[in-house]
Image 1 (spheres, rainbow, N blue to C red):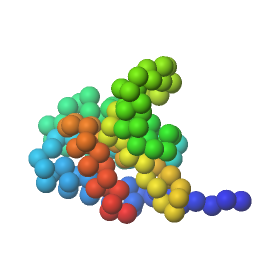
Image 2: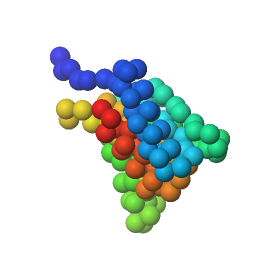
Image 3: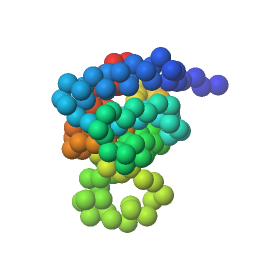
Amino acid sequence: MKQKPILGLAEVRRILDAAHDEAVKNSWAVTIAVADDGGNLLGLLRLDNAAPLSAGIATEKARCSALGRRETKFYEEMINGGRTSFLSVPMQGMLEGGVPIVIDGHTVGAVGVSGVKSDQDAQIARAGIAAL
């Protein structure tokens, strides 16, 4: 039987805290979502003044990244590059800002962020993951 690491509550809190600190340091009002490897929401943090819509977008970015096992930027670039048929895939959140969490070669989840420019969303997600 194969074994792999999983995200526990302590790791989710560490990710949310570090991502929160990165957002606050830059005065960015965002929502941060952490999902497990099945795209299920483990934690959500909506900062003051973040748009309500950002909660749904961050969650879908995390879900998409976890299930696809890659950054959501890949999907956005593919679609923008002309492969518009990919829009028929039953997946939402194909915008930059979702980053997978890879531990010992295993994708154990993802972080999705929404509320600022897409590259800034990804910056916040990476800062959260770096706390692991």
